[in-house]
Structures are given as structure tokens and as C-alpha cells.
Image 1: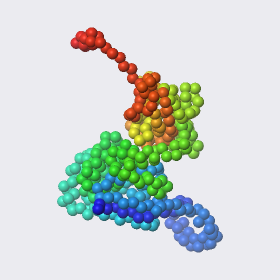
Image 2: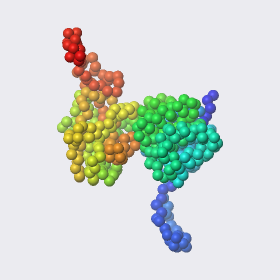
Image 3: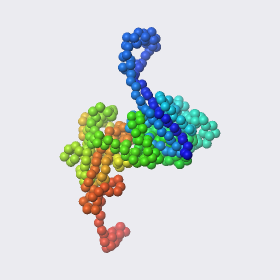
Image 4: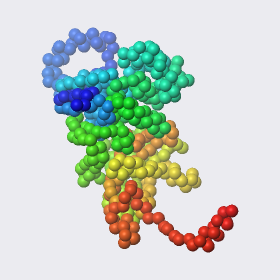
Amino acid sequence: MSEIAIQVEHMGKQYRIGQKAPYLTFRDAITNTITAPIKRFKEGSRLTDQESKFWALKDVSFDVEKGEVLGIIGRNGAGKSTLLKILSRITDPTEGYAKIYGRVGSLLEVGTGFHPELTGRENIYLSGSILGMKKSEIDNKFDEIVKFAETEKFLDTALKHYSSGMQVRLGFAVAAYLDPEILIIDEVLAVGDAEFQKKCLGKIEDVSKAGRTVLFVSHNMEAIERLCSRVIQLDKGKIVQNSNSVNSVIHNYLYANYEERSFEWINSRNEFNSHWLVPRKFYLSNKNNIKQGIFTNNSEIWINIELEIKELDSALTIGYAIYDESGNLLYWSYHTDVTKNKWPDLKLGMITLRSMIPKRLLNEGIYKIELIGSLHFREWLLQPIINAPSIYLTIQGELSDSPLWMVKRPGILAPVIDWCIIDNDEMGQLDSNIM
């Protein structure tokens, strides 16, 4: 019988939302203390009306076996981070319980578990001591932690002066290298650059192969599929999927209720509003600018981005990311991908950017397309996977003009590529030209 590393039974977490308290002076505090009973009597139930409760988690139950790598997925607000905070003993459940059998190393929000006034070196030793490690044990791991985190030059600098990326690197290194029996990792890895994320995923694989238990929360479905042997999906605080069939869970998560998902996104709630821009519409259309979501492989598929430019910046880049049904990224495309003299001229005010997906490229299937934008190498404005509006595209039919390929082809893409035959004399001529 397998050993249990984590046991969660009927666990729930309730939060109370109320009006934010205003800033009070000392004199205000004294006055309020005297008048509070009178105010409460006069206002009666008005205070209750200002407050509401919601369940971030409700009746969540599952076990995690020792050495298992469990992926946890779900949309923003599904309860993923709340679950990890309870399992990391940062907050207590309102009901139910979680039993943890082993030493836990966790990386949740940037800076969690660190003291901002202490140096990087001091925080490493503090974290180790909290985990119950002796100084000699931390000494043995110290060089590996520093090398992985790439923070050698800043070891004796207070953590409050570290960038968010530096804090994440150090936090992950500490969590992974101080020999936890259970490693808990949240989506905070998205803060790091691509190369560091690759290093982290490799280290998570190493930890799991060493028999450690891993809980991994991510919006990156490629990473979930690569690392996890089982996946749980949370939705509105409840478990809606829990299966060893990782690919099926991911597919159901990405494409459940597809009929409710649109080929057009309209920013009716004024979301994603930044200092530089605010997107207004994001939609698919044919060559005549008629909006639609279903196309053949040989159609002109136009991506349209209507946005308001509030301030110009030479580093401003707008584009899209496209994913297949398994969540695999096919490619990113930006308006700045071509030579600079061909860049569309961004202007203040309302503009519409258009781009056509190449014909005869995509296979049959459903694709998710995200609107992305950034100040190049400086700041994400619309970050893929994390914080970006999305629309959906369906490809059906006309995969080629050949009578041999009338159905969906193997593979992610289905490009139509020209072939030719060169006889031996022509090949010899080519060889002589090269020489």
C-alpha cells in the first residue's frame, strides 16, 4: 500500500469581504472608541450589509501519495493559491483539515518566507532553520542554492533591494535545495525569465525522481503535462476534475463549454487598463472583415485588435499568442517582427491592428488565441497565460488539394509544402555550382 504524503478532508476556507477601513489618527481612534456603541445602535444592520462572505474553497478532499507529482489547475480565483497557503501552513482552513506527513518547502508569492530587512545570505539560513535544519546541513547546500539562484553578487544585500525576479530565483532555490520531503510551487515561476523557468522545471523533475512529493500550480499546460502524473482542476473553490489522465483533464479544462467561448472579446468592463493602453476589442474575421470563428485551413483568417493608445513608447509591442487544444504554444506574433521600416505606425487614440494567420498552416482543431502586449524587455502589459484576454478559432476542412488527405493529419500543424524531383544531371550541376 502506498504511503500518503498529504491528506485533505472536506476542507473549506471562508473569507469575509467588507468596506476597507479608512486611515485613522490617534484622536480619531479615541473618539471612535467612545462613540462606537452609539453608532452601532443607530446604524443597526447597515454594517452587515457592507460585509459579505465567500468560500474560496469548499468541501475539498483528496490524497497525495508519497513521490507523486500532482498538478493543480484552474482559472484565476478558482482557489488554487488558497489551497497551497493552507497546505504551507500560512493560513488555517475554516472547516475540514489537511494532514501533512513530511517537511514542506514552498514557493508561493514573491518574497513569501523571507524577511525584507535581512540579506540574501541571512534569509537562506533563516529558511533552513525554520525547516528544522542544522547549520551544518544548510552549509552543505549553501553553494548549490547560490549557484542556482545566480545571486552571488547580492548575497550580502538586503532582500528589499532585490528585484522580483531575483527574489523568485532565491526563493525557488531555497525551497528546492533544502531537502523538502514535499515541494509546493505556485505560478510565481511566471515572474522569472524563460531560461530560469526551464531550470526550475528541470529541478522539479529531479526532485520528483528522487522520490519527493510535488504540488505544482501553473497556467502552463505544457509544464503540467510534462511534469505531473495526476491533475486536479479547481473551479469556484471545488474540485471538478481529479484524474491520472492528465491530457484529458487539460483538454476538458481548456475547452469545456466551448460553445460559450467566443471568437470576439469586447472589453465591456474596462479591464487591462494600463498607463500606456487599454484594449477595446479582439476578434476574428474573414477577408471581408465579417466576424466569424470557424474557418477552413485554406481561408484568410484575420486577427483584429482594437485598442486605445494612451501614451506612446518606442518599446511598445502588440501581438498575439496561439495555443492548440493541449495548451501547447504554437507561436507568438508581434507587430514589430518585421524590419523596422515596415512596422505599423502606432498613434495616440483609437487604432486597429490587423494580422493574417498564414493559409494552409493550422491543422483541424480548436485554437486559443491570446492578446499580448509589453514594453519590450521591460514590462508586461498583457501577459500570456497570466493576464490576457482570449478568443477561440476552429479549423475545419480543406487541409490540402490532394485526394489523399481529406481528414485531420497527424501533428500540430498541417502546412502544404511544395515538392519537386531533380534528376541526377541537375543534381550534379548543383554540386558543381556549390564547389
